[in-house]
Image (tube, rainbow over all chains, first blue to last red; front, side):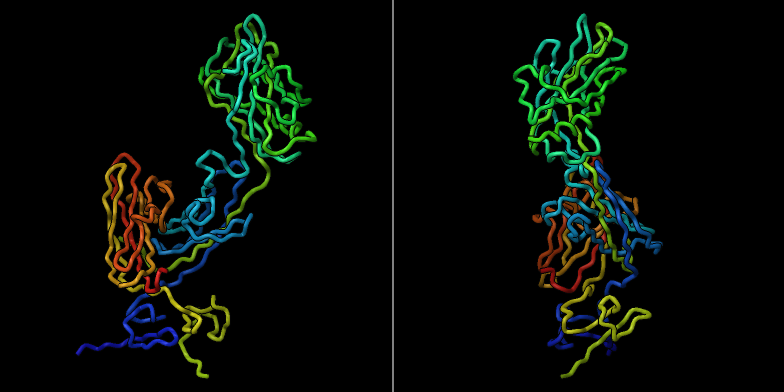
Length: 295
Length: 136
């Protein structure tokens, strides 16, 4: 007769003769995870970051079993990794993986799916205007035998009155150009609480004190270029009647471009990107077991 | 009242410690379950055609719903083993889906589905543990 010996520990109230593993706390017939160590590490999202990564060294020389957790410093909510957006009311997607030396963590903001990072607001334009032909179906800047400019409008700006911002940038998607010398421009904000749509000519609307001169060496089309509108946004949202959700606009006029030197943005993506100050830290924790994963 | 049971402490820690973190094992009545691995840990591979799903069905036959822990190596030969499911195929273009219609544990099976979003076949390795306590 084969020997049958070992150790069993049952839950309170159950017999050691049970065959139901759920009634056992320990049985030498079954292995248990063998704790190796616990590691913590942090990763920081800076404004605009869509992902953050970190790693810890377990140094086992093989791929171990592990469990991983995270906690955001803005809500102190702990979540198990992998976390799945919506399913656990987190808007992040967190993942963790192991190799034979390290445990790696990665968090991707769910907002990544619409192209936004941490403390980053991105708006596609709602209206544009060209004073070349006074039409609202494209944006333009430069000169033919006369100088002209354009305007952009963005709606639903989620900034409160005088809220601090780190940067504000319009990225213009240029689709056509003429000439080989610089496009010389001046940019302003539209100094209104919530500028109206461009069903009427916006070029005469009140301009902000903040302005920016820009000389642009235009490459072959299509291309994108940036306009730094931070000071203009700050001036507009500091207006007494500014409130979150208002519309914001910007005007560009020519500033001495040579004749027949111009750029046009038509049917392209033109965005306003605003970064707000402040970081997000995610603290990770991994419980690493000595149990090996191998195939 | 009788008070008996089994405690195992970490090296350098007292078994009289009231800090649960100092203990490797305790049979206190407040402990309802432990991470006992009731089925031999096992591995396998699943071949998934380009831009297709691969389904894996593992029979555990425990008669109740256990806890299952799954690790996969989405990119063959990478040596990177991920834990659990993903919401989308953001993990190395291949991931275990979180679709509960295909990835679940019942009282007989542990099933999971992997989506390979790349334009060529992948052979994905997996490794799993079946734990004794009920998953629900």
